[in-house]
Length: 275
Image 1 (cartoon, rainbow, N blue to C red):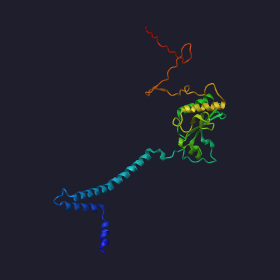
Image 2 (image 1 turned 90 degrees about the vertical axis):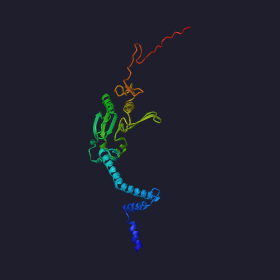
Image 3 (image 1 turned 120 degrees about the horizontal axis):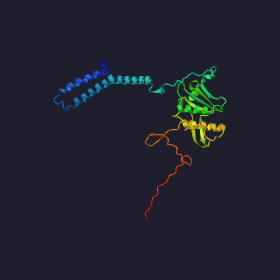
Image 4 (image 1 turned 45 degrees about the vertical axis):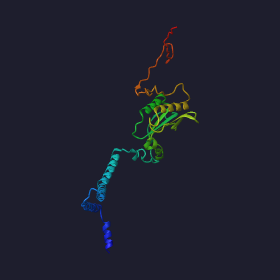
């Protein structure tokens, strides 16, 4: 019956017991005459050191890792380092009830409700639109108040299924006559396609919106002598840049008396060739 007790004693040894046994073994071996060249002493010392490192790792390393991870997650939540972890308010807004007021969807309107060019600007509540985009839309209404109708509606009040479509575009979109995609050139092989989904200038530029407004206006009211909107007239044209990155004002227009605007004549110096 002594064998089971001996086996139980072996299995009950802790890491500290093993370390103590290794220390006592070192003392016994070190009593030999030739300690410096004893392989057994070196191996025993190394086993003792490994046991000490394991104990230190479990005692200090593991709690430190847990503490750092907890602090990092707490800081990320507090300072919102990872905004994707929290869904935006417009996406989690409650579903509109059928008996609700449909007018709650509309923030404001501009222009003529009977106008043939209807622009619907959808954006989350509290988010400002791009200044250049707003200026282009206001200019269209100011020039043709009877032909344009602009509706600003809130993404937060859209039905949930329509909100999900806009999730990749931060909830913003501009539709003109129920279209958000516009092709330029041959419809079968268009030169360029502009999508007015998302916010400017990340997903599209103000120049894109201006070209689309001019395109739709021509489609509805026929071709005009000159475009309805012009970037230079609105002072929205980008400044000229040089290769060094410095921004310069546009060059002044040169008018030569007796010629058309922009006509420049260069006269080369006369060179006399000696015979």
